Image 1 (cartoon, rainbow, N blue to C red):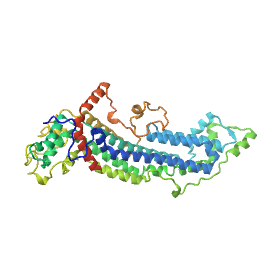
Image 2 (tube, rainbow, N blue to C red):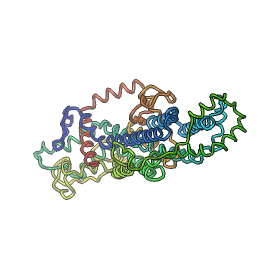
Image 3 (cartoon, helix red, strand yellow):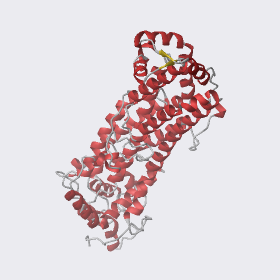
Image 4 (cartoon, helix red, strand yellow):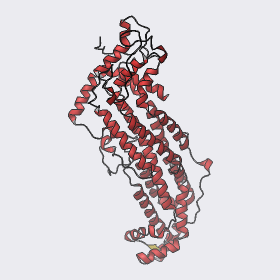
Length: 489
């Protein structure tokens, strides 16, 4: 009776397809769609900022900008690389951008001189000391670093949540759990009690036994959700990437104009420190000056002219929506057994305690309900659980949540975050491989949950177990599919 058919489903649930993975991975739809939407929003925000800068600099500076446009293109390439891959030191990258811009500007405002590469290297060393661009580089570096760290960490947090839910949803139920589920669902039919629903407490004990390992996720999961909400607050406030990137063209232009206005003083100090430059021949001086006329003033877009993201929303609206879903996810794992049994199609309500299936007959269920988590299952009267053997995959998810929580707290404080280089697993390229951001992984694939790695034998064993357990998997996966869809609707 308790052996279990090879394929079965609960009559009250629409989980009828033969492959459980096809049906039950729908529990990830909410996380995956939100992750895709967030990732798409941030990428389009960067693309629009780059387009805005390029359009306005072409109109304002014309040929001079076109001659030096690769400098600005490189800036956005590195920003996109950081967001997608993460192996970019933002501070060093921004320092390099301003140093390169100073070299170009210095040559333009002193076009009567010839400068060697060595001389320009000397010029770049005076960037911090002379502050030729005013306070713009310092402020922008602080704003960009904090905003990008927060945005990337937030998106990575969504990816980790998706990854954890994905892996936990396919944890194999034990044979004892499967037997208990079959007994609860079908054995009343054998007694002729077709209409009798399982008692609520009876259902609760079975689900807490079956989901014992998942229940242990709750503590770290709740800490993780709290950290995500903290980072979300930063995105709404001082680390708002939209408010940083939207006017970046104006800020860079202000810095250029400041350099132009102070070019005489800056040049004199550089000449003192790096030595007098060599003047160009007379014929080349006049030609060089005419080619480097740099008197245009920047005219920024009016707000209504700025492009909007294809996502059609603002960061504030996006974050508000995600925060609402995060709040709903608190205590998800500890409440999962109760949520399953609270559904009228799974168990009788508390008002029918004397008229329900208790596993033996139609009567009151007399056993107490056990607590959540593996440690509380030693005395579970319905499911025999080995409390000495935690599920390894669940332990990995707990560690992944703990690591990500720590990183999000760092991001909340404005500190950069080191992630595992996802290219190690997805593309074969290590950190510093120099891949263009277009060639690097296009979506986050943060695999901390598997980063400790498995041996080839472990993977083979896992694959074998995976195939053998498929009949059992359908039971619990369908439950999770039903509950999570209902919870996240």
